[in-house]
Amino acid sequence: MEKVIETVNLTKAYKKVLAVNNLNLRVHEKDVFGFLGPNGAGKTTTIKMMMGITKPTRGGVKILGYDVFKDGVKAKMQIGFVPDQFDFYPELNAVEHLNYYASLFRIPKEERSKRIDELLGMVGLSERKNSKVKTYSHGMRQRLVIAQALINKPKLLVLDEPTVGLDPKGSYETRQLIKKLGKEIPIFISSHLLYEVQEVCNRVGIINNGKLLRVDSIDNLTKLGGEINVQIECINMDEELINAVRGIDGVVDLSADGNILKAKVKNSELIPEIVTVITKEGGRIKSVSEVTLSLEDVFLRLTGEKNEG
Ligand SMILES: Nc1ncnc2c1ncn2[C@@H]1O[C@H](COP(=O)(O)OP(=O)(O)OP(=O)(O)O)[C@@H](O)[C@H]1O
Ligand SMILES: [Mg+2]
Image 1 (cartoon, helix red, strand yellow):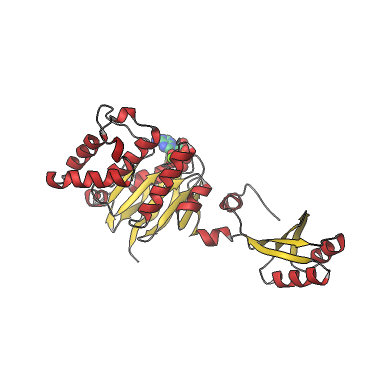
Image 2 (cartoon, protein in one colour):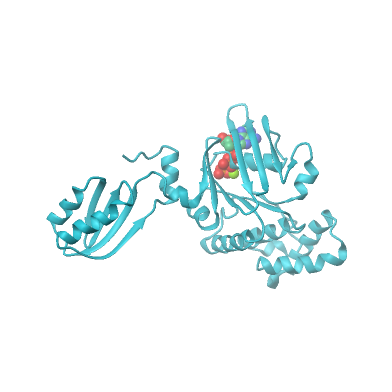
C-alpha cells in the first residue's frame, strides 16, 4: 500500500517545550487518519512540519514519497490543506475566491469555472456562490476553505481541527463532507474530539505532550484494556442470581440496575457461562450485548488520567 505521509523521527523543540517528540507515523492511501490529542499536544506543530511551514529540529516528513524540505514544491502540490485559522478577502464572493486560488495553481482558465462549480456543489455552497464571503457563517467559510483546498485535485487532504468553533449543525455538516471526501482521497485530520474521530476515521494516532502514544484501527482501540463490558437484560433477577454471577471466575465487576445486569469480564468466552448460570438460577434472558470502550475511555487510559483496576 502506498504511503501518503511518512514521518521519521520528526521532532520540534521550542525553547521551553518539546512540541513534537520523535514522531514516527505512516498514513496510507486508503486512510482517513485521525490525529487525536488534547490542547497543546503537538497536532498543529506536526501538521505545520508536514506542510513545510515549520522546520523540524530533527527528522523529516515525506508526502507521497517527496521529502517536504528537499522537494518542497512537489510535496506541497500533492496536498490540499485546511489550516486551523484562515483569512479571506471579505469583498470577494465564493466564485471569485476560488478563481483566485485556481489562478495561483495555474489551472487553465477554460477548466476553472467547471471545477469551481463542481466544488461549490460538493461543499453545499452553490446557492450562495455569488454572495460576498463577509456575509458567510463560520460553517460556510469552513466549507469554502475545504473547496479551496481541493482546487488543484490534491492526492491528500490535511485538515487541522476543522470543526472547532462550529455549532452542532455546522460541525455535523463538515463531518458528513469529510466522510464523503474520505471515500475518494486519503485524509489526515486532527481533532481533540473523540466522537468525531470515531465517526469519521478508520485509523487513529493518539498524541499527548508531543509523543505518539499509539496508532491503531478504531476497532482495536475501542477493545483496548482487555476487559469486556457485557450488558444483560434479564427478568426474574434476585440477589441469589446476582451473587451466583458475581462468583464466576473472570467476572471482574458486576452491577444490577432494574432489569439490566452490567458485568465486566476478562474475556468474551465467559459470556456463555454467565448465560448458563443465569438460566440455572431461574433468570430469563431477553438480550445480551457486548459494550466496547468508548474512545474517550481509551484516551484516558493511554494518557494515564484514569487507571481502572
Ligand atoms: N511558535 C511556537 N513557539 C513556542 N512554542 C510553541 C510554538 N508553537 C507551539 N508551541 C508549543 O508547542 C506545544 C504544541 O502546540 P501545538 O499548537 O502543536 O498543539 P495542538 O495539539 O495543535 O493544540 P490545540 O489543540 O490547542 O490546537 C504547545 O506547548 C505550544 O505552546
Ligand atoms: Mg492546534
